[in-house]
Image 1: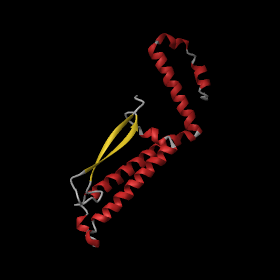
Image 2: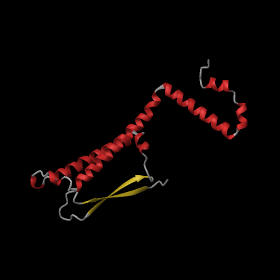
Image 3: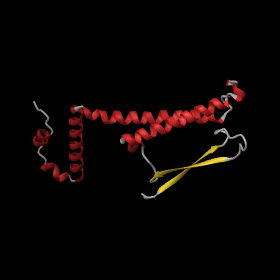
Image 4: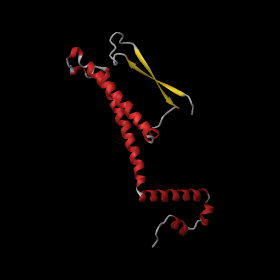
Length: 162
């Protein structure tokens, strides 16, 4: 993984930003990220990164909403028929879908971590992991199966037998 920042270029047509003089001019924003990719899990597990992602997406949606409002009110008169024709509407929809996707990913991460707050789930997970490890050991070397005392394994797993 490289230690320098990899620039990602985002092209935004100038008509979205309200530039009427040169509508074909593209404004280039360079957004730097560390490494090749940032995983949602990395962001979700860090409160500061979660805050930053939420804040940036909220600001983008706010700016897109303002631009959209400006584009559908030419001359100060609201014209709803322009809604699907202005590019800022589609950027706003895309931003909102992105915002929703990020928050659903955060929710899924929180739910996957929350199950480990339950002691019974943790014990079951540890038992499952130990049994999978034992099964892998026996599968790779069947000779070791005879060295495993089932009663000891059950006792270590705290399984009550009748």
